[in-house]
Length: 312
Length: 312
Figure (tube, rainbow over the protein chains, first blue to last red):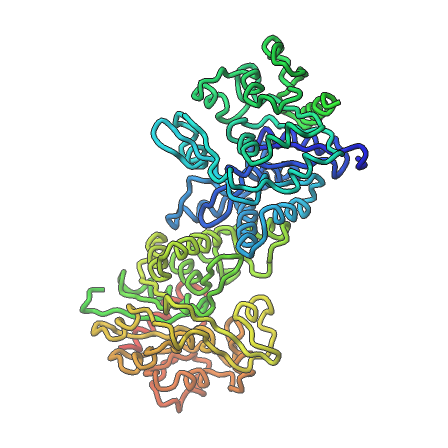
């Protein structure tokens, strides 16, 4: 896509978001997609800097992902974890041998003074990804959850406790002082921006961290391009992950409408599943109905096409 | 072996030394062997603390070693290195996926404030090794080599440049201020010490770093138990590694006698290969001749038996 045809900015978390990002990457001309990744899930484990959503996007966009697990790499072995367990190391967070290379090399480069965005950009180029991939910020933001018992770090909740605790409140520690990626804010103000796509990721823990950064909501409201969200809820259920459980615990109805209302006035257009046709009538923004479940590569391409068409 | 029967202290580098250490471990009663490992080869790579000789000893004594490579683990996969290469990371030092667990967990525990000896002792227990395994020091000592061109860090010389540069001088940076492992010095002064075995490792880069620590030579001279070295040179050749090449470059004859002379007055007994019978006559210390090439497990046990018999 030439500059005059514009580019698309996608906000994404991991699995579901990465699927649509892949569709967008596949149907847009090379270089016409910029993906902003949530880094609220990032954490330090075994001394390594781990960025789960960046990595899922890297692996998915490079065709290296593991469709069975929904995270990590497809061509993976697990020798490290087995050996680590034998040495008494922590094994609650599974790290594949190939995946580990990403964490070790990222950690080394961060320690050498490089920024997360610089490292991520180099990784995506080396993996042959044409889309730009921006961490939402190079500054540290950490999603924390107040549960019925206590405040928990994200990965403690998500992986170690398998999302079992009841969530009362979600906070993004560091967000108020974090600087959104300059290229992200610049993209929002760019005259060539054709559309902003909020991918069907968990609104509360994948998209909200991005929206919580200073200036992002304002940038989304002010930008000339339409902001289009794709519902992660299909027929009252989340495709994967704790979105539905979390909505119930936060006192929200588990439906596509509640997600659109959660995004509120940043939204210009909403894409919901055909199955939810009866619900999304009175939203106050234009709605496109489409099959939104992405099983095949063709599903990803088709939904990306629907989203771009809705952008006009 | 009960306390009254005494214990054996072995000084060792990697491959060759670890073979004899395994033999000693196998034929001595549980707990009657303490191995002191060279840490002059240790280095930091990819942000990880790597201790090659400790690891070769851990894997060898635990039966996890890779007899084909002579280093690393037998049950190894190499997915990490492949993925690291694709990300542009440094691949000149090969790290297996299982081996990596040792480095990652060690690095994490060192960063948390534990000492190398504490971590090593925990690792050897978890791997089911009955012998004690002591790093020669918890302080940083780094072997460096002055070559025809410049000073090189050990692994640059040993792995990256495959021992190609001509060695003029060897230094152990930090050795003069390093504190030998207290348990090592205590063992030398222990009345129950039955023998000190200098394993058939490279004298210049595996054993000398240990001997260079303050008080070690004095401790060896003063200890009541006999100090017995096993020649790493058999018939004018080294079994593996750069020992022979290095001896030539340092202006020494490549033979078993030169190694014994190098150890000098710390030696009470020397074990050389039968093939070198004609050479080792005038050494001034008792010599035991035996088959010293360790191909099989039985060879290791047999040589260990010869060494213990020589200790009387």
